[in-house]
Image (cartoon, rainbow, N blue to C red; front, side, top):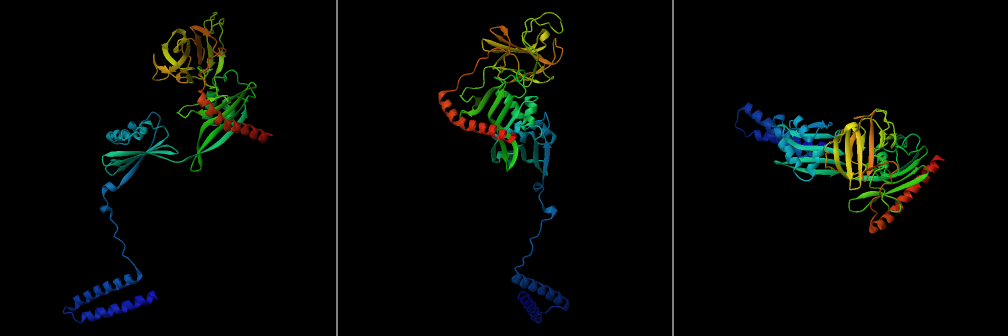
Length: 436
């Protein structure tokens, strides 16, 4: 039907054009050109009317595109030791823009903490001016700074995180670290496990074959893909036949910690050992023969054998009172913990940057690294513990406990811990059935 209509239109168009030409008083050649143009116009108009055809809009030529509309993405993977300032220099970006981004708002300050391995993308126009800066902090958080006139708007875009509960149970055959990895527990949770029981279990001395542990922990997902693990929620460690249980609890005021089922904090005033997974190479002995001097000389501490560079942690909160070299001790850090207690860390290969005499230290802070400075036959840490100025055996000394939980918090803890204890028991039972 449409074809028929178009045909009629064409015939009518030619008729109209011919009739109009009979009244023209123009030369023949001009008449023919005018007639043809008029025919083309009428034919196109009628076809467009009945087919709804529209002439395409003229496309801009490359020369018509404004230079400012052309942009380029400059990608850079952060390397160790780099910061945003050095990256801006490498990409030839304005330091004034960097200052504006960092000080745009509270979120802008997050750009100051770029981490190695993460990607920074700078979108610039044809003039090299920064239009947008993007930094992917992790799989669920992205920082974006967007130019508005002469300033920048900085936002943190977050994806929804889904949490699933997982569990692992295994026996100790070689070491906590190796057996934990073999069971599928991520390395950072193995270290966390050691921290949780650091006050009760000496993993350097008292770990035995067939000790066992069960861990209930979080797995984190974004858009259905697992990207990390969360916290350990509950854990039981059986060491030499004695069971130690820890439950994670948040006090509602930003604080969190691990407690026994009775509500007693596992955190004590001092850690049992100043290193993770170290081995005692020489015990506390007031009548030991010195391995280099070959004389009877009291060994007033404990030596922990470990590779050079292994981090050394302070065992309690305190203040640094000595930081430097001391005779046969080599590099030494000495810390006072109140009026009664003090600890000493010797033969260090180096010190933790930023610490000095008078620095306040928190329990678990790294103060230095294992070495063999001073009179030492190999890399190890010499650790001393003093009470009232008197040396005592760090392995056998009875360490003071921390303060008990507040009564109101204890009631809240009891309610929350029931569910976690049930999940811990279920994890133990599920694994036992699977093994059988």
